[in-house]
Length: 575
Image 1 (tube, rainbow, N blue to C red):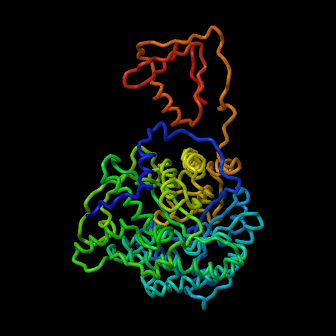
Image 2: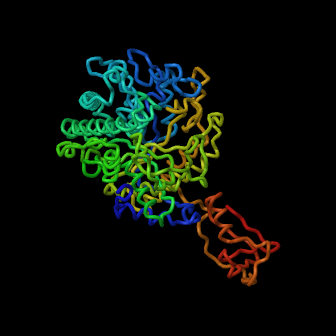
Image 3: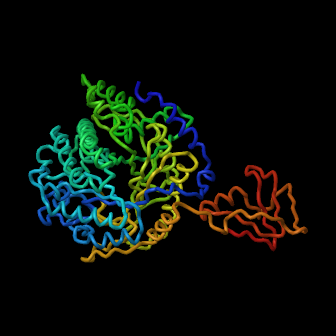
């Protein structure tokens, strides 16, 4: 029956281990370091930063068409026609990257800049030259290029023949990838075929929020995802057969993933719903690629039963043939994940009609209202979700090498370069990845955040995601490092978080006349030790140092455990 697919034991263990954690425990700060070859980097995408929408032979993409059409829904009707003007400011971008001293730069290729009509016959050498200059400039500065071949900006000419609903796109995409491997692969060793295909399938073909703005929530997202998966797999095998031996690179796909917590871990249906949420979102693409070449059982069962209840003879979810399963299975050399937020999930019985990916899922999501807000409504900064997600990926997909290819926290653009409040959130997200690496044995190999503010697919220029502020009202688009850029520079330099000297454990003895005592009852001025420590670690992430002539611990303290009483002429110093 719906909603009762058994949770795989390995994945279930992640919730059983972490969900019962007390707030105090999950906020404990961890000092340590990543491996010496850890790939610290920054990221961007072509449409969001390049501008030059029709420069030197570039063809229009679906995003050009969408944003240039009145009523697009993008705030202030802005476009990416200029964006950060990176097409004309390559030297400035390379300078930023060099000054930041990153090890890697993840960027995407504009398909219609290389092939204006989407096909090899329309090759635009000026576009190829631009990316050659970028790649060579990175290597000259000892920065590893991490290249996404396709990041949502499909050439408009290919959308005109049906886009990703057309099965011809599998071969067309493969030819584009083949060209990129051949031209850039002697220098590029880290490839991602596409970015966040789940977002494209649902938001582009289900809700219509992004190009191509289709609203067919019951069928189109599944059909498009099916073609995207096969297109990725075909391109992977092209690299494997033709280029791997001579170029020695790696190929994967960048998948977006939220972490979810069950509303009540003691309610079996909520726990199953949490796993189902992971399978419907991340597993939709990761399960075929990293496991058995087929969709997760939870996804297949849900869509099949809902389809039958709708009077259909077959599932709305397409099926893979055995040959296609063999084609898709194992087509990634590492796990690339984008992560921003976490949510709470509870089981519900969704509506039968109308047919919809959302109704198929049988769960609802809600915010973690006790976590910090961001500039995006319903997107909280839930740093502890990072560690749990990485653990889930390890358990579910066989302990792969994991690269965090996107992670950031949004701020209002009016904050400009003063994002000091965001620094804490950056530190905690990265620290959760460090916990996963050092404490849980997860093979976390790299981390990337946004290089600079840019055009945001849903919010235009209203949000700041990057380490550098861009004044989009200034025609010169100056790049100004934010406080977070300085923080990230130091984290990369330390390769993690070194324990400060003033927080290292000191060994010694108090003076002989120091008074140790306990009391039966705590006065009104007494403060819960647990509460004090919890507040302390929430705000300062350091070590508690008590300097006094008298320290009184009350035990028991009803309902609180041990309590700390600070007597006159004593002090508590928080470092």
